[in-house]
Structures are given as C-alpha cells and as structure tokens.
Length: 131
Image 1 (cartoon, rainbow, N blue to C red):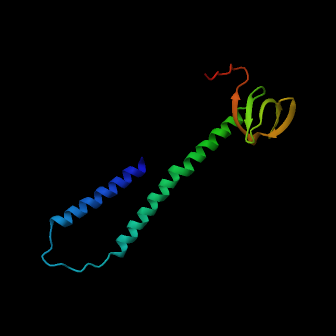
Image 2 (cartoon, rainbow, N blue to C red):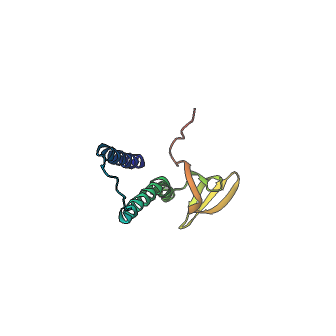
Image 3 (spheres, one colour):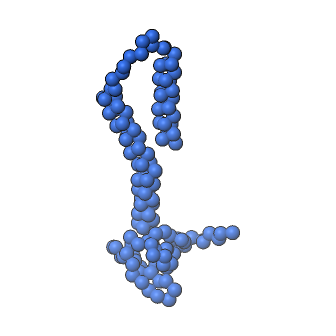
C-alpha cells in the first residue's frame, strides 16, 4: 500500500513537470546539460524505495512470525498437544530448561523447545471442532 502511494506521488510529480514544460514552449531550443547531482539523488531515492519495499514485503513478516513462535514456546506447559517442525504430533509430559519430553503414539521422545512449531490444544481447554 505504501509502495503504491509513493509510486503514485512520483508519477503525479512527473506528469506535472511534463505538463509545465509543454505549456511553456521555448522560442529557441536550447541544449540542456544533464544534471548529474539530480540524477544521483533520484537514483538514491529509487534505491531507498526498493529497500523499504523489501523490508515491508520480506523482513517484517518473518520477524513477526518468529516473535509469535517464540511466545508460543514460552507459554508451553505439560498436557499441551503440539506439532514440531518435523511434523511430529505429541503431548507434552515434562518441561526442562531447553528440552521437552513428549508422548507421540506410544513413544516417549525428548525434543528441544525450539523445535515446537505450534500448539494444537492447550491443557485444560476444550478442543475446537472444525466443521
């Protein structure tokens, strides 16, 4: 949305400059010397717009997702039903500093806290049925 607004502002500025130039015809055509400083400023502004666009499209959503996963991992407690990064479904049995003991099917596993992707069901809360 921000990129569209900036692009629209640049387009309107360019059109207004072109209209002004067309409205005042020169009696004698003059040779113009390109303004290297102006071109440098314009290219720097264009690079800045691209950097901002990349920030809003790529970096910011990744940081937001990482923060959500971190808060989910901090709120883990025994009895929560979880999914790991590798796709293992399990129920938390015990929590240590950096690891969890989970039960998956009839197997007890010990995994790192950082491998928890999301919590499917919190302990003590009724599960939501999807219809």
